[in-house]
Image (cartoon, rainbow, N blue to C red; front, side, top):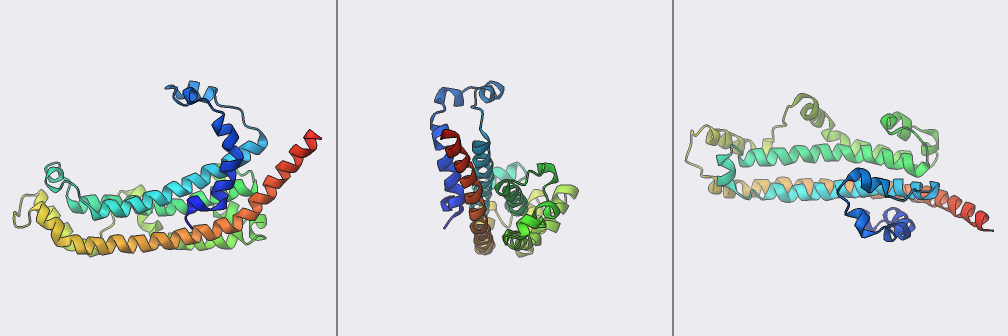
Length: 254
């Protein structure tokens, strides 16, 4: 099962489908975001709940799509000669995408905390959402969701230190697997070598690059399994709150 197929993705979408389908296409095409937002329908408390859950489920799905796309980008350096003229080597290309990979992985846990905040209706300000306010919350702990969050946090913690060095110190992580490619790339920038033309360099290191991308793909699959386990635990909580809204609506009708 992929994240997009999980009930926690589909149920909020189905709840909001009538609202989505009733929105005129012309409103979606308005150029001014301010005017576009002013025309958006006002959400009820029930709709806001489903929208919040759907928003962070969608963000989680986007993160996993981005991670999988990165492995494709890393495998293919599309214009070696053209990029080299701009001072961009294949190693630069791979290193850049690998750092986006690390940032995205850490983001999985952060989005999971916000999703949990929404599903439980904890009402914690998003600026205050962190391990101590969500994962350690007594209500969250009593359901077993905390254990799934902990597992996801531990799985993403491997890249947190180098990710922080990159974001806060501008320090790029060296890729040991591609140490030789790094050396050749630096020499190419300085015009110290014509022994390895860009296309030849690309072919020479392709097996190593493929192994790196496959290693990342395996890690992504493992992370997605952890995320799906979290969603399995969150689903009964979501169903509980959704049923409360339905009961309130039925009472209003009667």
